[in-house]
Length: 337
Image (cartoon, rainbow, N blue to C red):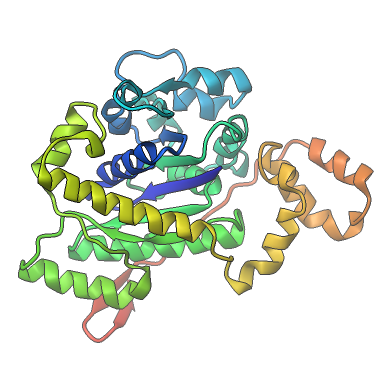
């Protein structure tokens, strides 16, 4: 199972649209897909046909990621009525807003990772739709992810927000989750020929280079119509719609390819250490990972000691991600403020 977060640190860029477009591409390709709706607006749930009142949602899962809670929070999407395959959603709720604190504990950040361990054998791909902020919910998603796709639009504030997101992902990789890396930056709401958009697109190319994925997405009403009707974009009629669906196929191909890339050299040692004890990394509690990380050299080769560490509980240490904000100016320079 691979886990992808779709994120932006600026609202209004069409992050949920991209999440649902990728889910549509994965579903119609035959991948068993789960969408986790961590955005308090829970638009992804609505777009997947999960409308109504549910006893368990993502909010309950993050409070108590036990087996029965996780499974009750996952429902089948109405998309499954239109096309054979597995398309599920871990239902979103506005109640989750109360959990989106600015300084979460490490224990809290690990709860989605624990929850996804419960369904690790059930899906090929998990797509997490995150809030447009760098508070607890987005960090929780990244702690559980293998890759993060950053969504931007060709506008000044979005360029800055995208750089902040990529910087924060690198810090998450160094401090907490050595598996996570950026899958790339995707451009949404692009209008070809628009002078401002072309200028900002040039800035994005300059900042991210090959990390800026193509093709770029236009803002067309057919996409919103399909999502409003609770249908996958790949099954919505029209030539324009099918072109957009094909673009999502291309982006999904690049995301899947990124899962197979090696971690950066500077995290290779950390990645190797964590990979040897995967059951500690996923599903056994983050406090176990912290204690294991500090004591590893003392217990190398001693399985009894490792088993004891896996049972350890009790840290409430908080993790802070510090992300400087930059302003980009022509010529590739940046100024911190």
